Image 1 (cartoon, rainbow, N blue to C red):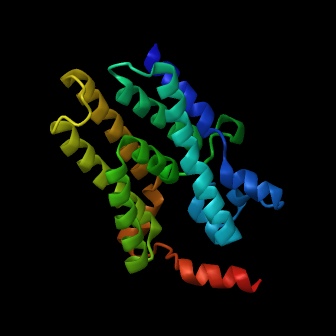
Image 2: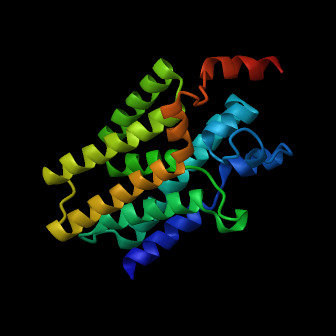
Length: 217
């Protein structure tokens, strides 16, 4: 019951579609432009730097808020880290599949990065450095997104085996399963990008040129 409540809290927080709301304020439905996605990358490509930054911050924070709410409710519980992860899962689900937008949301990376921060700040710094390094070197945001999810999974497993989460084995394995679900969901949401990466037809995102182009308008 506690796990379901945590997922529901996260899902409600995840329903705040930052990119969609920002776009509507500009009389633009970003889901009808670019990749048709309501996340950070499409907001950046469609509406420019400001929209991209605001969308990322909003999507990032809704997961942090969801975890904060769960920690406030269940503070002191021995399974708090697990409950927090369930809240993060719910936030990503709410972001990816908002019921009021016919379940057409984003891909959940910014929200997941917010979750990673709540799991462990060192893990967050690691994936942040890797993400920007890959984007700057390859200009493939999708590739960077997939790789940091895999890196997150590796870090979680290593930290968990070291005893960092202070969970009993059944709960620790449950923790691993949820993280694996997040990784698989990210890959599923990026399935079209993965096909294009394999075929060499994936769109590149030069964030510097995007900034220049939008500023000129």
